[in-house]
Image (cartoon, rainbow, N blue to C red; front, side, top):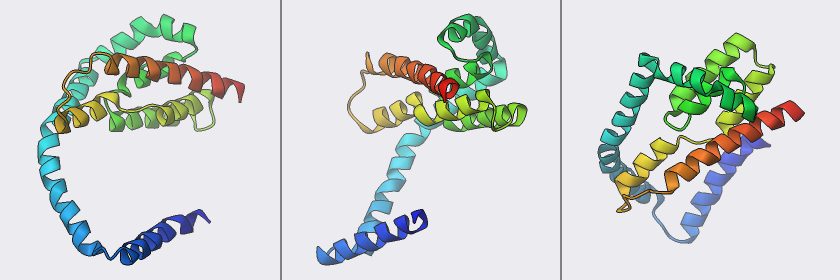
Length: 168
């Protein structure tokens, strides 16, 4: 059934656009033309955040920070092996998936740590990436409370993820 959902959505969309007398192809081309300036506007922000994450990982700061914060995270129920993942997830999606791959290879897909890592990635977001895209496209430049609240929610989600993986 799930293999048919996407084709059904496309067919329904084309039928609806035909009913509303909208030229689907021209509308698609107009949208694609608007995407190119968007990519040009966003690229410096994305490049800066990717460079910062690469520098943090290469310098070993994330490992040192994970070691320093391990007592706090362990008290919250987050395994030591996942602290670097929890710390990097708000910054980078692809880096998080690389860490997930390392966890899966090292501990196996059915281990408690691997299940926790998968749920943490599923319940969290790349906060700083989304924020940079948002800031680059809107006039809102002050995010005084938004980022700290998002980070607290990400940690809270990680705690709940580990708790659920332990219970289930």
